[in-house]
Amino acid sequence: MTSTDCVDVIGVGFGPANLSLAIALQEETPRTTAAFLEAETDPIWQGGMLLDGSDMQNHPNRDLVTLRNPRSHYTFLNYLFEQGRLIEHLNLPMEFPLRKEYAHYIRWATDQFREQVGFGVRVNDIAVGDVDGAPGYVVTGSDGTRRYGRSLVLGTGRTPFVPSPFDTIDSPRVAHLTRYLPTVQRLAQDPPRTIAVIGGSQSAVEIVLDLAARFPHTRIIDYVRSFGLPLKDTSPFSEEGFFPGFTDYYYRANRSGKDTLDAYMRPTNYSSIDADVLHELYALIYEQRLDGDQRVFVLGNRQVRAVEDEGTSVRLEVEEVHTHEVVTERADLVVLATGFRDLGPRPHQEPYPALLAGVIDRFQFDTDGYLITEPDYRLRSLMDGTPPLFLNGLCESTHGIGDAGSFSLLSLRAATIIDGLRKEGIA
Ligand SMILES: Cc1cc2nc3c(=O)[nH]c(=O)nc-3n(C[C@H](O)[C@H](O)[C@H](O)COP(=O)(O)OP(=O)(O)OC[C@H]3O[C@@H](n4cnc5c(N)ncnc54)[C@H](O)[C@@H]3O)c2cc1C
Image (cartoon, rainbow, N blue to C red; front, side, top):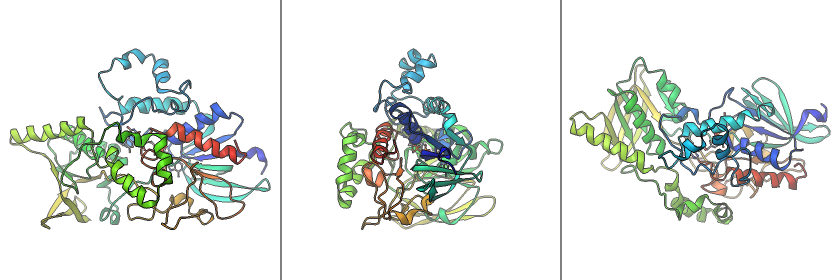
């Protein structure tokens, strides 16, 4: 192959993380060549959960670019301006924009990079090979075509977390939140009698409210492991966990320090709920009880111990974790609002992104079993001749709360990765 077939940066996934990187490359180092592969033909940001009325969880100006370059063409504000909606948007009586509007913004930015992206190509394999006499990445897509890069940036988003016992069954009646909308849209003609939602997250509450409006006669039960549904920690002091200074601080902490910081930071983004939807849900249940017609239930201290697909329904054995009483419930649909996996050796984690299986032996793990990721998101290699490989949006266990589950630091992370590419003489 000739060098014209090989780009400087090959990106896998074209969600917000690698889109933000593409913008940064264009603005900061336009001579660097880049190509991206995206599994979806028409990606929609978190499309499985684009619920009517749902709003963003972060300040809209912490967008694809603003923290890195507030003068960029690709700011959320400029998007609104170009759509002729700026003044109406600024007049909205909402603290945060609709997620739908943010999805439109991301689509608008994505459309401006179409020629750099192979849409509808799922990457199946990543290998290191000889590319023009030097080591490079050889990336094989679902279309059978191979692409080549002098460096690789993995921006595939985190793997959905499917907890036990749901990981033992493969049933169309059990769906992770990432498939929520297509799953319930199929049920419109034949509303389910009972739906179980598993989890106590923001998504769980949004899903319960959506189900209650969509299927007004359906029994909806949210099983939560803790006592109840806690409020999100929105203290501005805690929100400093989404500052770049926190990323550096967290990175330097040892594993036990990281655990302590995680325990403090988790309620800012995980297993906690924004006041607006939490209060809406509580009031809904109260009103249903007042009417003597309760159909929505939040059952705390519950753990699903066993699950079986019986064909027409799913049988759940649910234990009250303190009294150990077990009840059997049958649901027509189970929605897992159970979040995503971080990288690491623990039961809820995965040791490395599965896509890296073919090259993982080239990279180093620390004594705790975590993949060593440098401050600039590059994996630390064990072997000479390993071209640079960066993780973009997968590093919460090494870089802290602001890394994977949020937009907040995307744009600055793109700049950090470009600095890393520069060090390698690639950008
Ligand atoms: C329901 C929900 C709501 C959220 N709301 C907010 C919010 O309000 N504010 C906030 O800050 N964050 C929010 N988040 C966090 C969210 O993770 C980030 O906002 C953002 O989507 C992360 O971008 P990403 O590019 O890292 O990952 P993703 O958005 O997951 O994008 C990854 C892309 O890679 C593609 N891909 C995956 N595997 C392959 C492959 N093998 N080959 C090719 N392409 C592949 C996928 O199709 C996808 O397009 C939310 C998350 C969820 C699930």
